[in-house]
Length: 86
Image 1 (tube, rainbow, N blue to C red):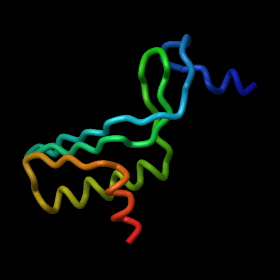
Image 2 (cartoon, helix red, strand yellow; image 1 turned 30 degrees about the vertical axis):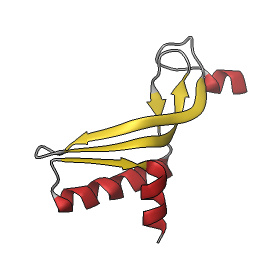
Image 3 (cartoon, helix red, strand yellow; image 1 turned 45 degrees about the horizontal axis):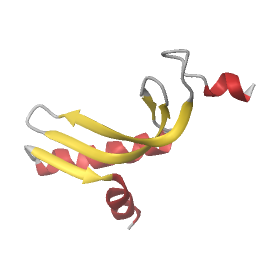
Image 4 (cartoon, rainbow, N blue to C red; image 1 turned 60 degrees about the vertical axis):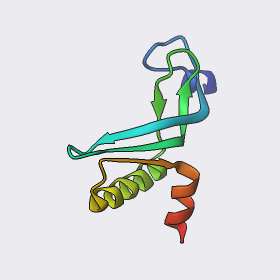
């Protein structure tokens, strides 16, 4: 059963493995990039999946960037995650 759960539903040949991804959002007036975001990543096609808790924190990061109105904002997950915990 565990083998079935780790198979990639996109390519059907790879397996989901713990890894990291880069999350980007185009806000229209600017772009937010968060690097090294924890994710499940297919070892064959590279498709990634985020846990709900990670997605919620990314929403907060994007909202903070939206309020600053940057043209480009690049963050590293670990630094942003620590800042949100304060």
